[in-house]
Amino acid sequence: MSTKTNQLVFIIGMRQTGKTTYAKLLADKQPQKVLVVDTYDHPSYRDDFLKIELDELAQWAVTPVAQLKAKGEHNRRIFGGDIQENLQYIFQVCYDALIIIEDAAKAFDSNIPRRLKMIVIDHRNRGLDVIMMFHSYADPPPYLCRGMWDVMITFRTEDDLANRQTKFSKWHIIAEEQQKLRDQPDRHAKQVIYRE
Image (cartoon, rainbow, N blue to C red):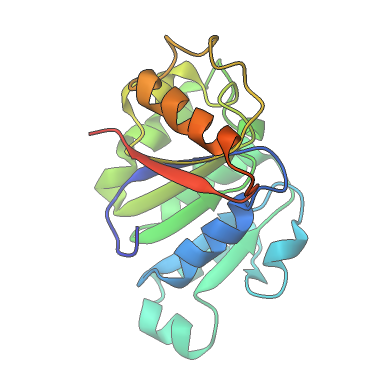
């Protein structure tokens, strides 16, 4: 994912496997603005992603990316407040951007609220690429697992691979790739899986 594609990407892996580092590498390659929805002020984003307040977001969203890049303000992060309300507002005002949702399980649980469901459905109409980061295959809600995701970047997890069979489309491929990750010594290894 090195160009804008209007995709929903899952990055799944247990802690300390390299999810955030990889998401930052993807962000560095993007031609558009990048907004990280940082659920707990992750130290990895502090140096490269300037904090933005919710009331500044609408202006940032309409500022041309070239102008933001010239000032070093194209990569931003938001944290604090109610994550579901923040996401709803972000998806109302942002267009043509990459949105990275760190620890997305805090916003998207199995009973995904309708307002957030509509965000996921409509992200392509707004020119948004969305990366949702999860710690295990158990975390993404079933609604997103069956047919909404486009790409999954999977790192090693501790999931019981027998328990997720009906949740994901292409589970047999996901489980096979996860087993390959578990069989190798590199804790930071990853596999990329395309839904289609």
